[in-house]
Length: 85
Figure (cartoon, rainbow, N blue to C red):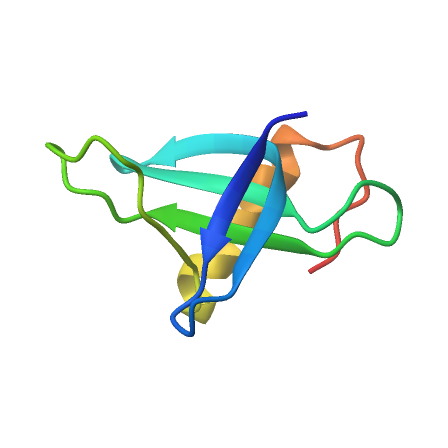
């Protein structure tokens, strides 16, 4: 499974497993987990990169309406997987 390194504003680096990805309205989103297995926590990351950037820049989706809308898309994509946020 592919991993992504995420650096928070305080400089902490965390590795996440990419579970699924999608594009909504021209914006790329990743569904990631912090570990493999049943006890993993899931997060949704939004691609904030400039079109000309060679490196992707993601941030966690914090807006509740956006989070719920994107979560529903991932939920439909992974109907046979039990997702909890």
